[in-house]
Figure 1 (cartoon, rainbow, N blue to C red):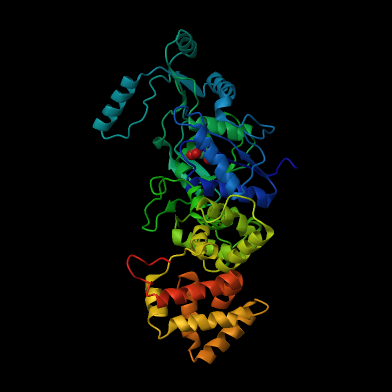
Figure 2 (cartoon, rainbow, N blue to C red):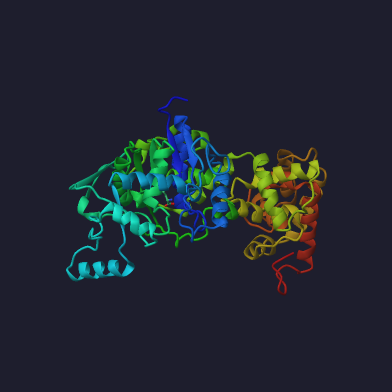
Length: 502
Ligand code: GLU
């Protein structure tokens, strides 16, 4: 691959579960890398020792894998610029810090917490923004080195260059200008020897040869500090793109508190990875036309940074649900069946054993039928219960309106069952012909027969076309259920006692 090839990274801090906003960042980097034929690096920013947990790391891996966002270099697969866990790169940061110290671009600061607190109080009392006052700037470096060696606690601070403005060129928002007085001599290495985020991030992005940094707008205020660090380290900075912040439908900033469960919760709720990716891709980016439903390949093809808008994007779960429904419709039943099966087994609707060919075929037929009206896999499973058990619940309003109210419904159902006994082959067309003929012969309106039969065989008032439904349900189940419902009607057993269930 040529030297100039795109290199981007996703650099999560493994604290808590991976949030949906972070997943959008991962996705934009992945899309850009794949569109450009470049490289995506997964780097784990775990220098904040207290907060990182192995579960959080698992959540990063698990979420990206579920969504099909693969990486080319990372802690699990290695690569030419490893290690890819910041906690394993401490010597690299120490070397970089030593270089800055040597050049006078950084200095040791021995100020204690109390010193800093006093500085803050004084600034606040004077109505100034609190900032480090630079009192250790002028310490003799050799003397400072001796004090540090003797064990006196100190941090390393970056010596902010004298400038009026800091300009951040951003591929999404143009040039963003910061007043230099907002920035003091910030800490780059803490007294425990660990680098702070800004420093480790820059050392790694430079060392890992990143060409672009795509991340959330929340990190934009860090970028000026990072740019002066690149300068001091004599490394060319990458190009920056800060994706817009996410808002709740009430147009509040979306925070981890709004969606504390993390992105994998959408898997549990029955969302397809492609729908989540499709949804997240549109939180800031747009293809430039009115298409909304995309396959992964189509998004990769269409993606470009210059079509990301700086305007905040609203996280609208209903839109995600709608997209999920679209993708359910488009995905063949045979592909969805394993996901549905897993859920049905968990819900006790199917046994855990290997299904026979017939059972497997039945499941695919059910899924193909039911995916047309479901918004999530979980809903599809819930609406399909009656295909797998005779113990399905009856919709109370449906029973009153479609079974109890029409005159002579028990006879009608028995008549329909008798006619369906003779249908061959058992196809939707043949079922419809026989069904309608039976209704005519009985002098019953087709609608009355259709609605009644639907409630009788499924317990529900809505669903796929009745004849398609019966074709999948099968002759035996259909006729047995029609007759069982008739019997129950005759016995006055519908809606008696507690019963809305069969
Ligand atoms: N580790 C940082 C975070 O999770 C992101 C670093 C970056 O993308 O620059 O917020």
